[in-house]
Length: 272
Ligand code: URA
Ligand code: URA
Image (cartoon, rainbow, N blue to C red; front, side, top):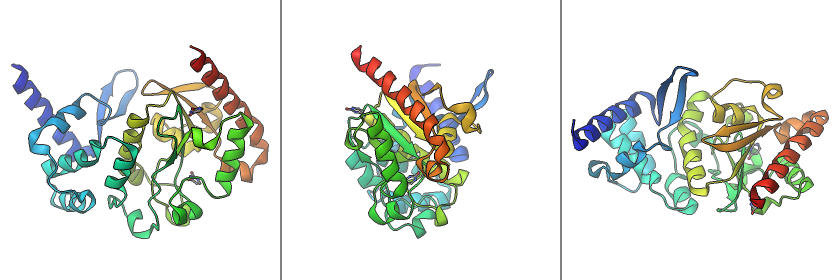
């Protein structure tokens, strides 16, 4: 098979995968069973982006995306992906996705909560989803849990504005209920794109929604915290969600140990 027909074959396969699974592809891995990997992070992203047929047709991504989902139009779907996939900065990415209509949370949100902080951060902190205050202000972790997060960071000498803070979901679930899997699957590609732009040296996941989404697991906090995991080769530290600490202050000690571990790893990394 020559190079261009192989490329066409791969393209066809991927477009089909996007149609069936959305923005993720399922990779068969003998050791780990079916593992979801991100389409965005893989080489094939480039094929989709560079593909002339998939060039942007309309700037208003959210509207077409809805239309294309309704029509089941595969090519439109991948062209919509490329609208925001091509964003070259966080600001441009936010511009392209902030009117997202991919899930029903679009109807109940006040503000889309993209994320905030240092574009060049070495550490990205990922929570679950905006709460009431975040939804009102359009900023992550600005309510009570956010104030505690600021203190936790300060306890190990990180300032809020040197890190980058965002969430798995960009819109508030009603009554702060746990995100649904379908919402996570639709929103997670945005987070992956954010991480691709920031290229952090470390990720800190707050709570099980963030941890299990990133690791594609259904583990308990007990089994996850206190060690270093990896997310696409980026060291990932997992700890309690600050909102959980407000309810269970006895978990603060473990959280402190986890962020202390992050601090030590960070200090080691910048030394080298
Ligand atoms: N210092 C930085 O400059 N960025 C981080 O993310 C953490 C500490
Ligand atoms: N809880 C979260 O997970 N994220 C926020 O932004 C606020 C509260």
